[in-house]
Length: 458
Image 1 (cartoon, rainbow, N blue to C red):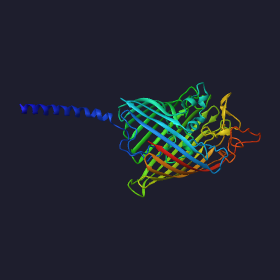
Image 2 (cartoon, rainbow, N blue to C red):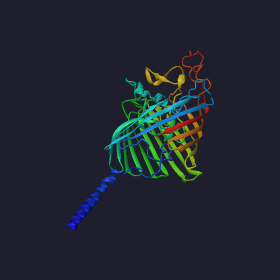
Image 3 (spheres, one colour):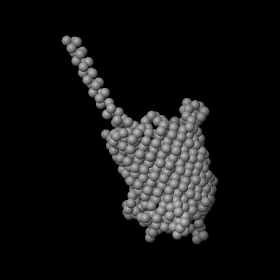
Image 4 (tube, rainbow, N blue to C red):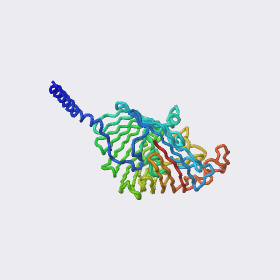
């Protein structure tokens, strides 16, 4: 009798194991994760955390980020206003640039992400979005406290397919929107003058472990709404042949000049990142890597002519820029030194961040493609703008959740652009001071600044 019982138990166990092995391939498909096992914490624009997030459960992974900075411009503007930056807003004051709270939700392949943003970036980032002047309901007020908000579904095909709708990061220009992920604090012209966010539909396809293909149908170029009737189209290809190399391209096509439906914009953003040394246990140099980015684009139609300079009545209007950075880590990755810079030329100034204060252009109610205001910074077809920047900085990272950064930045332009000692607000620097008839914003061609930042993330 005992022998029969033992035989029955062994037979049942064998059948159970056989069924488990039969179902294993199905489970393995569901568990395929793109780029799994690759160390991407060294990459510019990526999460540097090496251990799982602290605020993590089965259905929710939370995130809290704080970006606080103090910056001093050696031009010492009397109104403390920073000109031409999306990372900084005020000189000579401790500022909360961004406070982010939110996380990712997952339930049976349904997915969503919400990241709130508070601080100066909620004002600085939307300031050049003229799509909000089309129609009603103040989109800049409705969306400015969101950095990311989307919902979608994950399909267990290949290494995954994600279909998401909402607001998400663009990553044109390589750098992350969140400073805690970047090698440098003040982004080069290439990143600072290209989009930080898109609003629309995104489809991500991972056909292999090392490749991502991504397509977009979006409202427009860093815009909450649409400038014209046609949406913007674009996509991303990211390939990591191994964990030490990353190549990516972002490409975009749309009509983003308000009221000019025949003026099209094309933009191509291309980056290469290489980690050329890796010895994480070293007390000396533990890692070394470089990143390069090259952008090219143009606008054509309705009075502008892309790269063609032959017709003086239709000036050339294009964007060419590049940037390169090198980063060296020390002492088990607790210290890092970054240096690099970039260059930009943008005839027509269609991507230039307009100076703030009285020098900033306001929409002309009778023609949204033109600017009004007391002393607007011109952005007419053919207006030249060339910019150059370089920076060097040191990070102290005692653990994966905190970074202390000090950085020196030099920027210059071929036209007066940065805030000089007289500021861009008024003779006293206050908005309440009446403007004398002979007062003008004090814009200069060069600035040097030093930045101190504390970056926190869990």
